Figure 1: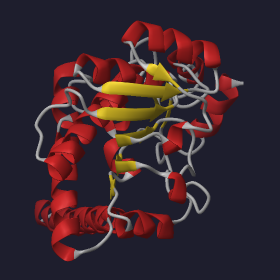
Figure 2: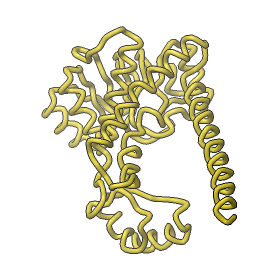
Figure 3: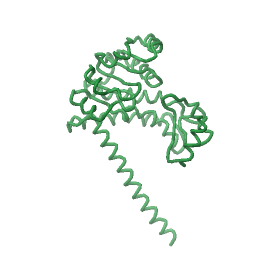
Figure 4: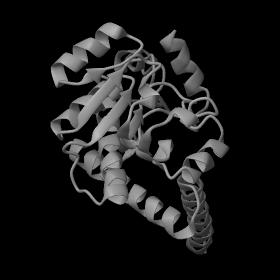
Amino acid sequence: MFRALGRAVHSLAGSYYTGEDVGTTPQDMDWAGQETPYVLGRSQGGSGDPSPVTAYGVLLGIKAAVKHRFGRDELQGVRVALQGLGHVGGNLASLLAAEGAQLTVADIDAERAARKARQLGARVVDCKEILSVDAEVLAPCALGGVIDDRTLPRLSCDIVAGAANNQLHEPRHGAALHARGILYAPDYVINAGGLINIAQELRPGGYERARALAHVATIETTLAEIFERSEREGRPTHEIADQVAEDRIAAARRANEVYGRWAAVAEQAAAG
């Protein structure tokens, strides 16, 4: 199956790369990689499981949010309600515990939740309760769509900052968080660490862990800028993040156009 995936990816001739994500492993990517070079995060010849690096980026994002909201540089004693203890959520829980955060955790796998809670001294609640836990930070690290009309009234947190994709069921729910005074760390910004990590495989000279982690560290400063701009402009953070992304894409396109024109001129000059 994964070799067939590799053949499908290869048919796109490099316009798309794939990699490990929910429900797959670096070993699965090894199979796909037998059919195409356009696979990242392999266990053999790649950067491996990106989940720990994703968790590290989320930790930095939580620190940025806590700094912005409370003016605190550390997480000692900060109450974090963490939903989901999979590859990213489990690693994040360990990082938060090492920082001194007070954890309340939930997972659909009750045994996994109990085991992790014993290891870290965390409190366990049912998955239905985690969103209403009284905490400074809610960290959604399961599947998406967690912030919707049904869950919004139940939130009892100051910050939403977690690893899950598509945390807002609809964009208007980001505006609703903003209206309630809940600081939201846009999902595709705070959880970008894993993608940043595997993208380093494409750099000249190949993958270097230290270089990857240094790039991931920019998540903290990027979020700090988004939070400050959101406060200054009175706009929801997800709107600011979208604008920043669109501006960067537009700038990259302009740069490519300029380079393309320069290359054409240089080629004509070389041809006499």
